[in-house]
Length: 155
Image (cartoon, rainbow, N blue to C red; front, side):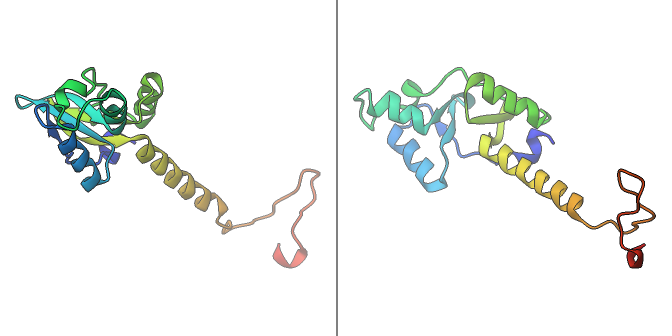
């Protein structure tokens, strides 16, 4: 499975010149925790709900603070063809929960740790369902000591 299979997009974005109040409102409206930040038409960072809590509220800054002052500038990204296992490794290595999926400098969407977990849960559920299906042909199955464990009427 690839990042493009799980990406949520197109992303809600915010300009670096926007206020953190505007960013927080976008997060609330979209029920999202991270916004790619654009400056002069290009992605230049990301702002998360945690950035607002730590870099604005805890630092005593006001809601009129510009996003560009408090966003994370060194953003880890993945491309759409990145394998989900690699996306998870990047999240683990950099201790982040959300990654922008970027193609040719354009943010196509976001992928979260929850997206990966839900996809893996679905795959695990499909596998369990397939494994749990009764076999169509039982044939002449024998047990570990050479006996046929099936009752005579089922053989």
